[in-house]
Length: 467
Image: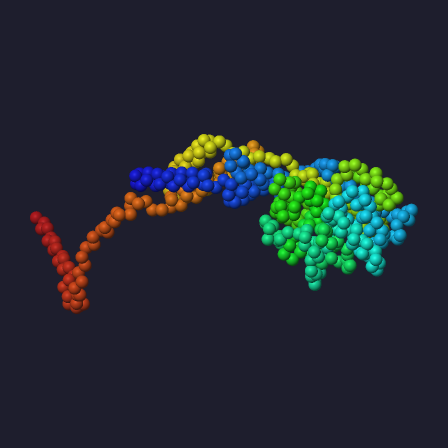
């Protein structure tokens, strides 16, 4: 029996060592290793978070979590042209007509602005045809312009306008679950102006969603992802293409491979709420008409943004205008995420020594009886998992947990197979005495009586004579 247990221990040791070494070589940097690292990080950090690196010794896993206090670099805040109540009646009408907006955008170009954005929704009930033509001509002179519009969801979907389609990406390029993203399929305002071929469009608000403190950044429109107006302004501010984005709902949105990272919750909203921030420059719209060429400060960042600050605007529009500079600055300055936390691995020699020690422990456990063997394997797996979580959460150290679990699983499987030494031995059953199969005739009453033992004759006792 001792030889059988020794052979089983050797088999468990050899199999667990091979499995641990193979996984130690091949698993780092794979999707399974990334999923394991993400699962461990959820034990001490709440998502969304950003995972980078490849899990190797040279480039270990790195974790970025949302910053509790999003510090904003004010240099990324846009310059704003404020469309106010016009108390001096500079414009032809209040609110400004298409002709007034055409004059404002023409003055943008007169001051040297090549890239512009309009956070004000350009829509009128009965616009002047000549004024609309002048506005379209003025908008078409920019190299690029970003327009804003509210979005909603209706029973009958509308075709996506070209300005929104140019500023969208395919839904198939999103990594992760998209079912929880807000769905839109129409613009609730008829006759809205979205510009020509040089125009991109982003949503101002999503009217079909309940308002929250977190700003929505992405939404689903059929098979494409559309973006918010502040996000498009930040992209234009940094001169980044849309096709370089990496979108992971519930984790992050990376504007480009080397660009800023924005934390996203599962509903496509900015996972942090930036503090209100002022624009880098605020110019009244009236000053563009009555002012001179020095109205814009030197070095003002593009795009120059036209913002609706009228007191009679909708409450959602006023709130959007108030948070616009802070949202653009937070997205462009990478302010929503804390610095990278690197999870370094022990040296190769130490990792191999730990796995070798584990294989010896598994060989010892594999030679125990059935119940004790199972308890030993479960206890070893629990110790390995606890060490993985404790080392990652306290010391930012990434141990070879997956190779250890692979070794435990292999050892448990090999220890359950019957020993080969007993496979060829067959113990013969003990020989039984032959049975008399000849049938016997039933006994007659006379035979039964003859078979009974004869009764003993009573012994007669003689009487003693008295002499």
